[in-house]
Image (cartoon, rainbow, N blue to C red):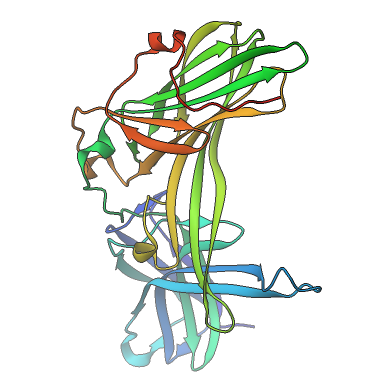
Length: 352
């Protein structure tokens, strides 16, 4: 029977910790009998790890994959408690601890390829034997990322996508324009993204549905077993919204939508900041083209920062025109009424 009856970590009721903040708690130790020369400590650990399999040579007749891995330690702190007289009596003993989170650590993150995790672990040892330990995971919101860039990042933003359609069965042509507008493109975790979508339906069919999703694009950097650098880009869906539009033929409709960001979430960052992975985000609007198997898609690049106080908004206007995935910056904001006129976009594609 172990000398330690129970070990418990008492933490504050904080759902998400902010990088640069602190954590105070207690380690509660309940002993059955006297413990001589104990080692009682609490550790704060934050680390990242990634792994994926990559095919070595697609031209080979047989399959051979190599594992690409990498890891990083973001925080590792230990608080050892001084035991007076070198022994503890039977009963309950309470130890207070305090840790500071570094300001430049990334947010908690988890995917099928990599993860960033934080935890507090309390333990009681006698010599080299661990008598009891308890571990508690923490959710942490990072604030890293250099977003004090030109003010165009905080200006209103507009993205437009257009596709032309040829219905060979009835020898008719049509087109569809999808335009997404935001008042700003920098947001913080937990904030609500409010945006307007203009749909110009220049076909003879109804446009029934719009799908909006926030995508997180992660760039992973690892090393093969031979020490060669390798990289992988993966995309996941953070949040999603489906909207019924029922836009009539040859009509234009405006839809106002909102997506709520989760907490915590990784901020927009580079590999240099996070050591093993980088994050960026896109707000994607998608709609099926009537009577075709194709879709039209508008992608709006946005920035996730830690809190709204890390940036300021200046009243400027930035317009992005997106046609078939290519984005170019312009200086003119187009009003919704212009969508009713032909020639809004200068890039076309025919879809059967």
